[in-house]
Length: 448
Image (cartoon, rainbow, N blue to C red; front, top):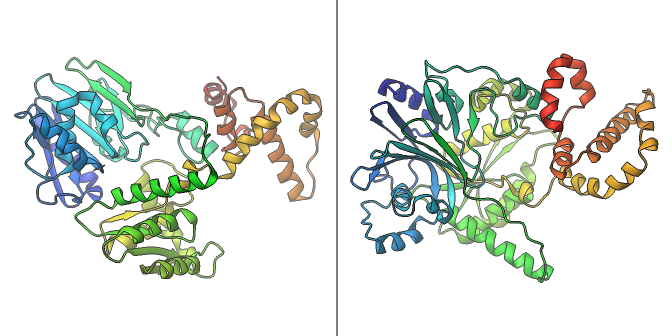
């Protein structure tokens, strides 16, 4: 990989790391990074080297337990030169190999080059907080944190993936590990990809969620356990050599995170809120009440909702591919606001997914209950297909949703039923919009 291409790729994602940059080339291999300096600002320059130059790392993310890992590594003879979590990660890999990933607590997309064996290791954190895209083509293999960096490789092809287009119109986003390009996939969360000198690759899963029945504890004990874990997680995430703030809406998730920060911080927390005056989605009043209660410095910026459409091209360019994320525009505004004051923010993202807080999670449980009844009453349930349209929009809306609930409930697996319940368009609408052959090609993998 020519160094000029690596440099151009780094320039394309400068917004991810405006503080520092670096690259490394070894024959046909090259990699680079842009750094947002958070821990050990002076000593954390990348690429970083270990084992007399054998291992080289570029790393996007943060390892929250890196200080706890250091004594164990020092007992194995490691002598650290910096206070950077990057150095800890690289030393852990050099000492433990792939066993290191289960020891890490953090978010990361990491690339480690073994200059002796000419082997590349790519790893992504268990939840997939940090992105990592991979494209393997005849010209070789490339990886990046964003699609825009991959598209700068002149030898590579990038064709639109028709299934990704269908995903977008079905769910409002593209289903992982697919991307908008047929030749690019996401490295799945909790996975390691290793590429050898002959181009041979091996994918390995190092983490999967362990699901156990909850028993033997009272509700009060579960509440205390949850509170303790949230406080601990927030404290670890506040590890930083630069100021840390929070996103604050009127919701439970961001309020809980901000409260945990305020409880444990050594100085006053700054919370950031975007308001939409005169609109039903405005949560400024609730956010202000929370900030006042917690004693936070509260920074609010009102946004004219009618002018929000002006930033849509910028938001879409940030995604690099179609996305119907409803929170994208508010997040864009509050991120720009926060960047004027701090470099790191904590937010409540993921709370509903972890605690099954959305209606789609409730519907999935309802489907499990109704499935045997709907299967037994299939002839009666088919009446929904014969009911005519009516002047009442509410009637037509209810009929469509009942049909979708019925059809989703009859699917084979629980995951298929859940996925069908998250669709934003009906099969009838997609059949009316797309060519029949296109629909058949895209629906078949979903039905398998």
